[in-house]
Length: 173
Image (cartoon, rainbow, N blue to C red; front, top):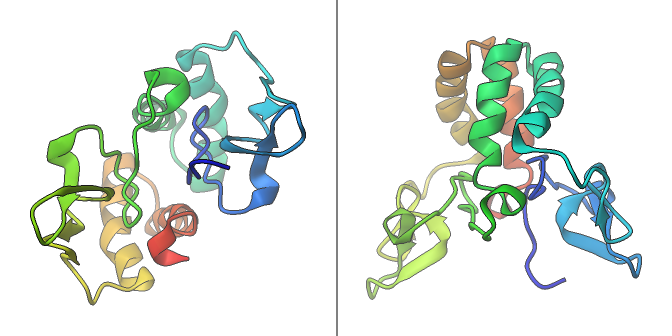
């Protein structure tokens, strides 16, 4: 596999384990897509639109996290637009917080000032984490209230949401 993604580049599902990955035509694991979107080197639904995909993902988010369907559709579309299938380009994600690094201003910096697309500017500056003491649990405690407020979900569901996503990010594995 050339580039390992942490979320399916079609539906956004976290790819926390190989069992979640789709397969290529040679039966190897896909580096980009989940088993629901991609099998045997082809999309399982090649004609689906981004709006239809958001409509397919939203009920899952609604059920898992008690998010209203309307907010789940908004959340889904916000995630989908940066994925390869819909954007037409590979947009790296921060390996600490998962934020899409869509341009140079989003990228973190090394000690010599060069950009790194491994981490975003919020998490990594001058060759170091901006919050080096941050643990997985404190990160969840920090971001869950924001998710709870923004998407009107119970705090325990927001914590679960962040925990599931963080499990796919290298910093928190």
